[in-house]
Length: 522
Image (tube, rainbow, N blue to C red; front, side, top):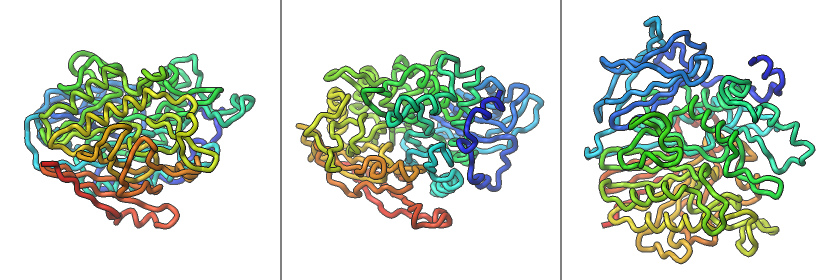
């Protein structure tokens, strides 16, 4: 089946320029990739193996054993969900095959502190847009996966205690409004059978061929001891956010929603349960009982020091004009309730669509659109944009700025840039007394035509709806952000690497080009 599918696709669609450097001083054995997430009492791991396993593997943690669950139909992809663990404890983990032979070298991983614990510090790595095949059909190369992996390992050298990858883990768009209809049948649409199931059909093979080379070599097993949090964005639904008379790509059609869910099922962990996140949110309780995971709404809770809210704005968006929303109303109520709660020192919003800047794209919070003079304007209507999206933005902004004794902070991706600024006004909301700090975390894999200035002719700029004091105007270079949460402040460090100027070797000694300190208001 795989040979048949490969024969129908262009070979350069899956080409890899170079293999990523292997993990050092650790024997990955049969593992191809391993990505874990944790809470204070659970661990969830997604893993793939070089060959399908003939029996059920197990995860051993101390004296406990947890059976794997097969996530594909061949036995190469497995997940392991360990529950009932102790908070704030460093565990030794091992994966064992059904014949009791080790599948890889043991490693260590820590659970997060208990919810009522008061840790003194917490370090988080943020980035976005790490996907993209090394070479795609249109010859628009992304950063080679070997370079992306090298940048990941440099970020890991700063010993973050968690990683947040904000969207665009896969680029394999199935529609392009820029193609005329007569050419549409010659696009990647032929690779998938849209009326068939994802698993147990050729679709499963195509999905692995499309998504695997964008994820497996980028992360490998390097994050085995660092909890990861993957938030999906538009390209993870196998489309760009576009709206034309010919086609509107969101909300996602059923087949592409299933592709997004299947990619998450195979490659990276869902979000673990949280006591303060209602289990009945849409796409928020996948599985059985109290241990069910969430696909779209995530909580990273680190004792009483920090809580980071992660939310996908694509899956539940509506096109209902003044009453339209990005985020399902029940999920919005959860966000507002957590923002108003006072049981944690730092609370951060991490939406998949950024606050603070616009590139004139259709599915942004803001109505700005690109004018004929190459500048953004609100003087003409943005086709298919929904005014209700901006109303929801302002409800969230008002709640974030209303927090007392906290630093209002959002960290996002999507716009392929590094940046930071303070939102002083949002519409009629005056936020000067407690402005919202907005951060663009930085992209990892963006190709030359992926920058807003290359694709749209304009860089990311503050929209007319906002007053933003920019500390770093958005920079279109590869990079990442590291945040340190301390009881009285948040420290942000920004890293960048210029693909046209800097050598790959420079990544290994990359240092922050900008740092800023945000103090808690008295």
